[in-house]
Image (tube, rainbow, N blue to C red):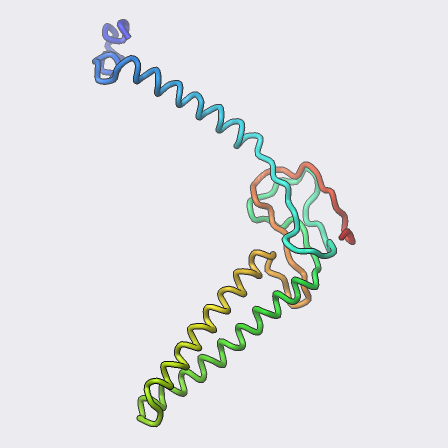
Length: 174
């Protein structure tokens, strides 16, 4: 600190001119050092165990030990009856929404022509909003389960970027 005041290159630094106290600079350095150690311990050595979001049979493994994977990369595929049922819920919710939207459009037209009361049109509008919410919920659940196809095949994705160090299953495993 004393030398910093004498050197042309460092004489304007906050510690040398007294803008920052020695104690504050020391505390900042210690906190920064501790955060760096934590960051290295967590980020550099990050590992993640990947598990299937639903029960089923492994259909295919898309990576090998030593493979580099990006976050969200396909790791494996799994066939599950539960996955097929979840997909059917999405398809059912989509069909109900389409029917509700058609009825809502028809009733809005009838209301505008004075054929039906506002209350009846508002009820179909509410049913349409409910059908939209039901579809969003079904899609969210399907997404959390690996977005299964109609046949119940879902994709297991990597939660982090990294290198595959071990694969504990094979195609056909349950």
